[in-house]
Structure formats: C-alpha cells, structure tokens
Image 1 (cartoon, rainbow, N blue to C red):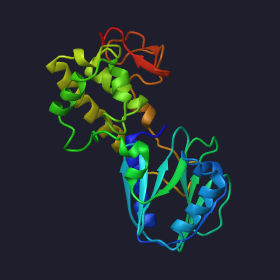
Image 2 (image 1 turned 60 degrees about the vertical axis):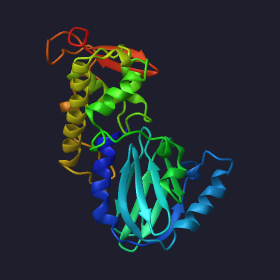
Image 3 (image 1 turned 90 degrees about the horizontal axis):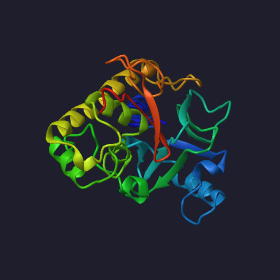
Length: 276
C-alpha cells in the first residue's frame, strides 16, 4: 500500500503534467472506483463526478496522509490508492489497458488504475468532506510533529506501540511498512504499551519516524515516478528496508533472525534481540 513517501512522490511528479490543465472530459469506466460511502449508488456517483469536474482547471496537487488531492477551481479530486492503486499518464486522449477513471485534459490523459478495485476516486467541495481526511492526525514531516507532541499522544494511549503508530488519527500517512522500520530503528518492541515509553525512547522514536520517512521519500523521488510507463513502480525501496518483509532473514544490526507476528490483522516484523 502506498504510504506517505510514495504518495508525496506521486504528488510532486504529477504536478508538472497537470499544472493549469483543464479537464475536458472525465470517463468513469468502472463505477466501483467511485463508489461512495453514502447511500448514493456507484452509477449516480459516476455521473456526478463526470459532470462536476468537466471544464475545471487543476490548481494544485497536494497530499494529506495517504490521500492525493487535486485542487480544482471548484472542489477537490481525492484519490486513495489502498493496496494497488496507481496513476498512468497518456500524452493523448487515447488510453489502453485497464483504466478505472480517465481524466482527459488538453495535453494528455490521467488514468486512475486499480485492478483489484480497492482504491477510490472522489470529488468533494472540501477535503474535510472525506471522513478519512477530516479525522487525519499530524503530518510527521511537518513542523507540527515534535517530540513533545508525540510524547503527549503516547501518554494518552494504552494500545500496543505498533497499533498506535498505524492510527491515522494520530500520525497521518504512517502505515505498516514504515512503522515497522521506525520501531526497529528506535529499538522498540512493537508490543510495548504506547504510554509506557520513557522520555529517551520517545525521542528515539520521533527521530526514527522522521528519518525513515525522509529516507524513503528520497528513494521514491530518485528516480521519480514515470507515469508514462504502465508498469512503473518505485525502485530500490526493498534495499532500504531493514525488517519489513524480511521474516527469517538476518537482522542487519545483530545478525539474529527477523520474526513476523500478527497485530491487528497486519504483519509486524521485528528483531527480538534489538527490540526488547
């Protein structure tokens, strides 16, 4: 699932392609991609989006947590990629392959693709109209994410540290991959109660979150996403991951085996020796 670094890289790479462009036509090819949480049916929502965005210019491309936002003259297109969603760019208005939603512009077409149909595209008047965005916590790469603020949040939670870090209402954009990496870097047990961390451990965790996300963002930007390649994806991420997806392999710090456990239905990877 794309997390903060991946979505931020997409936002930066997409802006030069769509800056100031007018959406001439929107085609919702698979209505499931725009299915709302409200009682409106997917077909009705598809018609609403197609009508609402037609003729509008793209004013900016932004990110909030794991959401990608295209600010239009009126309202926002809000994209959530879930597990496998991605973007593809066509220099003309002809598209090929699996496309869920196509935004035809004067100098190309932006396609939203998710063959498993977990991702969503929405048009809203304000980002706050999306419940997931409205409930979003602090951005971990912002000035507002301080050690003091993290300590306050930790003190108010008895949840296991891993589940605390996955809570988007606490820290926006931090997901399963980079929470594992941050806990390993900070040498913290994922099962520890969040409110039991010491002051020194909290400082280590704060630094680890910022460092891990910053390093991953640099990796996602070099090379930047190539939306013209239908098979593009981020290169080199696997090489910078110390524990995620490495169950049974040697810990890069102590040489012992990385273990995998399940927490809240998600896989947690850690080193029992380094993260006591």
